[in-house]
Image (cartoon, rainbow, N blue to C red; front, side, top):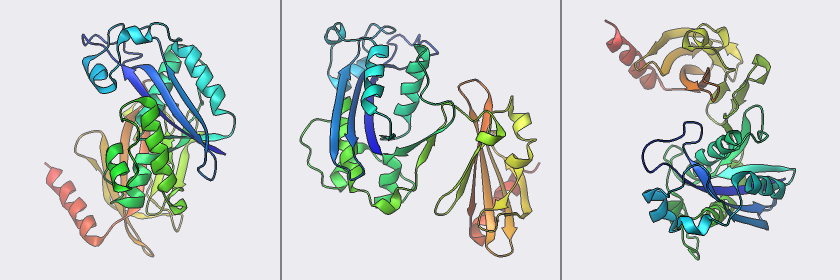
Length: 304
């Protein structure tokens, strides 16, 4: 299996009148291909002629230092995207700095009616997250240049171009311990459509569940699996001690107690799919008694 480490640069409307289906138009793809030993196998770099936004946004222009005239003779997005995917090959996993690039690649592909990368959630490596897990506090998300500085990687090409950022992301990836690599991420551009496609995965200290699509929030919150709290070590439902509550209508919390493993907190996040439906991301993790009491106090303060 190969690691495809890629980065995108994109343009957007300068007037605020964006095309809803493609708010960010990709104008550059840069990528590095690494083998299983993190040895370089290939490089990819293409500029793209824009079709939607004909004027470079001032932020794009200042970041990547390119003029629209330089893009006029380049190939269209569908042509370049096909070249890129052909270059990726057959057996690979995508790696990006943060989760946004993979989503925008698929959004641009959908706009041009290209064949989708997948019809269900895709595993990928968020190198930004892996860096935090491997070298920092597991929660903070840092800029790429910060990671390069921490790991004392030589800065031999400028940042803020698609290929250079893919190049540095690959350098960071190659420094991460193998023990961290089970912390993969899921891209949910294509949300699960059926119960069979739903995702349940256990990581070091929490369990993640990604539901199928529901028509609305009410339907999601009436689903038995969505509302269940299960000890992912015992694999048994636990007695609920704090019922589901929300302080913003997007995030919901509940807690239970496992007789063997202690207090468990469940958190639901409501997400809107690309098909304008609702799906749920639920995380379940063990918490301390103090954290349990703090959650209970938070719930109590919300009562009228």
